[in-house]
Image (cartoon, rainbow, N blue to C red; front, side):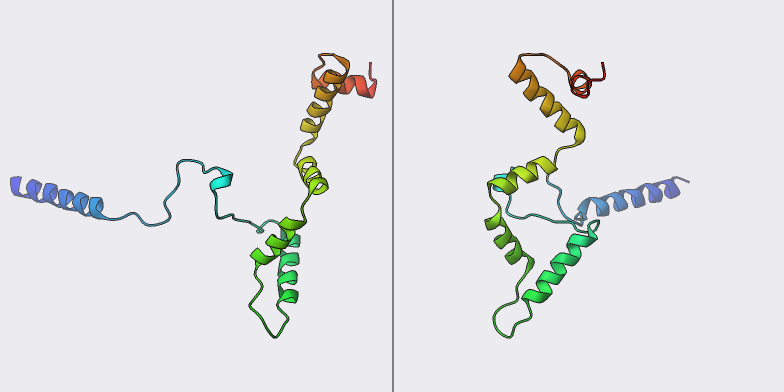
Length: 132
């Protein structure tokens, strides 16, 4: 009886030793967030944006219909696009990232600063719509 128990305990110890010695597979996860200025790689996911994915594929196919030179890759398109983004485009981008409630909150804040009032966004909306 003791021999059986000793062999089971010994097997468990061997399994744990083997598992402890194994290296973990896969990508190491970064626990700290890396600042944008320190990042060197960026990832773009078009799995849910079929329209833009097709546009990029079309652009790359057209750009690579040539007899000489290296293959044009997505990075080349991004590099050209980045140089074209300026003041107006940045303002449009900032505006497009705001939800309706954030736009309302911003308008309320600007109104309060201009007129010296202390409306909350809900009161501001009622006042602007002249519901009361």
